[in-house]
Image 1 (tube, rainbow, N blue to C red):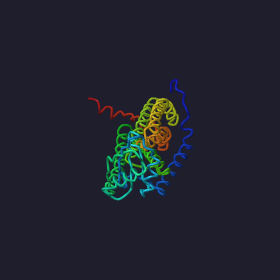
Image 2: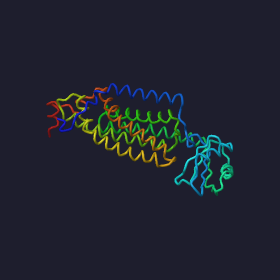
Image 3: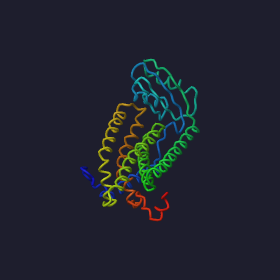
Image 4: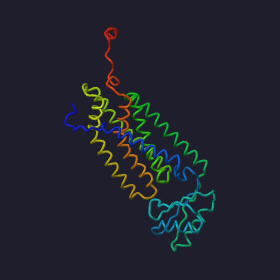
Length: 308
């Protein structure tokens, strides 16, 4: 029935996969509860200074100079070209902060340094961004649940949202565990992970629904294995090609886009796993069966009533 596709027993490992997922979620939730997120200035508020160097700047030297001048905890990044430097400081609003930073760096460098930008992000703005970002993510999950329930069936929508929640928690937990800075670009990456994972889950769900209607003798477990095996090559090809691009971004994209690339790397990897072992496993746990997807036969009276 499954054609020439080799059928793998994915669901044979579903209990082990459930334990693995629960462990990942426990670590993520535990880290978020105890360590929290290392929120960037977009969320916490602070000052941002952009400088232009004549020659390629050494980020470690800049960090040391700033620390020596009393600017502790400064985040120093390249901003596009190696001569463009972005400095983030969690300090109070000071209109002359840019001039002070410039003076501190100019003392230890013989090249001309240009002050290009000196901005302050207020804590109130940061709090609004944090709240709106969280609400946006919850709204996205709710709308996805409605769409999948309408497009497929309610059990599929629960499976899809469980898989998406699983992916988001693990990505955010990863940033909490390793205390990587969480800013707006990372939040954008988390939302992109939702879209990527959903796309993968929809493809698998569509094949599961088709096989439930087409394969009449196989059990629910067998249909899951057949469906996952049929979509495996598409899932792997899509994931591997995406991961190759993300690895290039993480390595060569510079510090400004590093967090974005890391979030997507973790998200795509976990999303590929969850499409197979979380969404499909949730359907098995909810007792998905042919009756859920095949309309019940009409009785004779209903058939007569519908005759013109």
